[in-house]
Image (cartoon, helix red, strand yellow):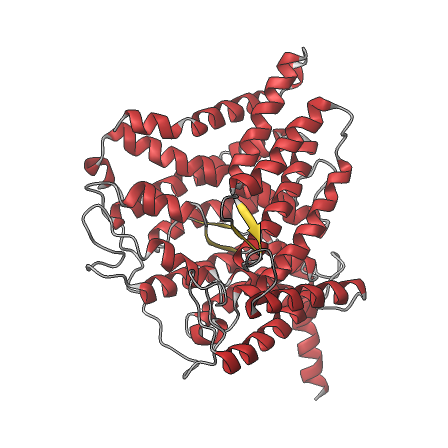
Length: 485
């Protein structure tokens, strides 16, 4: 018995040493809890990604996987598999509490901006994603991507973290139906201005459970809140059968928390590898194809910089300049994720800001990402089980984490307008524009313009000039593509 205990302690010690768990003020149990919290806050992508890319016919009339009808089960299985493998890679190689999955926004762009173009096929669209991933990986290996990240002023990195916090809170409120598209207004509160549906009640219970437990400093507060809200949702659905429909404000937003008939389903991974790497350059004019790849590149290039900065700041893992430890490894895994997502036919995979939920629940090391990855791999078999968690039970965590991240606004010098205005534009346009890249681009461009206008152009790093110019081109991409037909 003592030998077994010593062996177990030895393994735990090696895990602790490799991931620097104790050094970062964490424990193995805390990392497991944080990793599971991250999984539950981003597991929706296994349901949502198929609905975004699996329901759009390509330019030849075919759906992902082939055929004239959606193959959502194929997309779901591949989405979970790729997310699981990449999250484990991030944890083991970069040792950072950051999980990856198919990027929202990026997947919509691939579906509606690339694959659906006349003459394009899904394998050709995924070929563009693979090419973009290869290019961005080369930029990491040459050190260029890290150099650009280091050139960004510290206050802009803080503003990025604040903006992502606001973005997270907005995502949480919107996905739960607490904030909706208004009638005559861009958005509105609840159902006609009221908390009048059971799913909203589940959200409110989950939110206050998380808040109260956090204030009382209960370990695992965020994960506990997800479990409590999910149990309540299952009970309510079993009693009332609310169902799910975007046209039914009384129903669940996406996942119906009903107890399934079976908990295990064999996954089908046949979607993996259905890629035509260069076919898109024959289906579209070469310049148009290159601009589409460039658009993907810009979004991927800067989104992860903001995400890892925000997560690192929340975990206390950034240095005095706002740079996370092992940032080169983080960027490399993320870059490979773009190519891997294309190869898996699930769109570019990128680092998820929902990882901040796990950090908020104690995650500080890559072990949490390994746990998240394993959960994704298991979810390929246990889809009916994880699908129990509705948006309304998981999204309160995003609101709480958003609050934690917005607190970094105190570190910005609001008396210096050359700092304050770019910072403001950075964090306000992320939720309003529903894009991390848009906020970063606005901040970069306004920073350079104000420095030049006030005679401080010499303070601008050469790479910031290049980044601002790239964003100007990025913002003009729509008119350019339209002009090219």
